[in-house]
Image 1: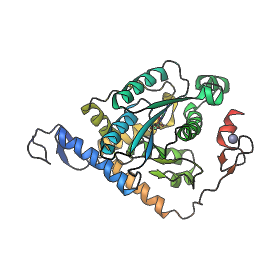
Image 2: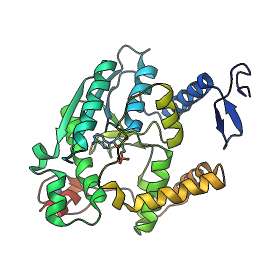
Image 3: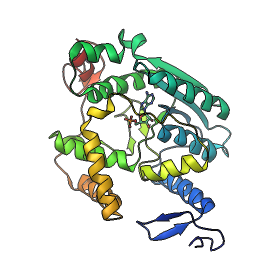
Length: 300
Ligand code: AMP
Ligand code: ZN
């Protein structure tokens, strides 16, 4: 069966949601074009950016680094720097640090490590044990976001890119629904503008690509990544949502894109979401939408 795009090479992947068969070369090109278009559509980057890439050692963020390096190579002033957070998860994060450092070195991208231990004085394993957390992922997410801010500022980057893909974004939408937090839906965007310098500008160049296609692209480009899942991930509500969405896509190809587009429409319809306003946390001074920020709530 020949590729529907070039009509020349053997196809190896059927993109069911578009009804096309693709060869390896055409798949790679179409993946990169999708990312390029996303960056342009949302004006995520410019050629003078010193862009930080938050790498976890997983397939999404290392693939993102690979693609950004490729797309940015034409612009001499465009520079990449990688940032990795060591949360302190025994038997898991060390391997990720090793894989990410080796990969960044091979790409000539400098990498800096920021640890919970240095910033908070404890590691994730300890605080989970101490507070008997039922949902470690939300606690880790809160603590990780703050470290990203601190790390990005210390590294002097103009923006920070993360590897969130379309599946992540859809899962987050349903998580907000099941957590009963509809107002958070409108806040999650492909480009987070940082509320006038309060936070670092964050971009998600993969937010329109399916996780499955990120895996495929990583495989075709022999990008090494950590395959073992985080030991805490099993408890997450996100897993049940992921299974539900994967089932929908398998039984009804195109469901994820349809839902994703519907979510984006919903965001533009909502007129009741107030513009975020920030004050300084009375305990640590960080920008916060409440008197006490979410980090202090979980750490003090
Ligand atoms: P996750 O929330 O684990 O799905 O990760 C989403 C994105 O956040 C990844 O693609 C990375 O860009 C970033 N990220 C997650 N964990 C880390 C980490 N430990 N260090 C740096 N970036 C991370
Ligand atoms: Zn605080």
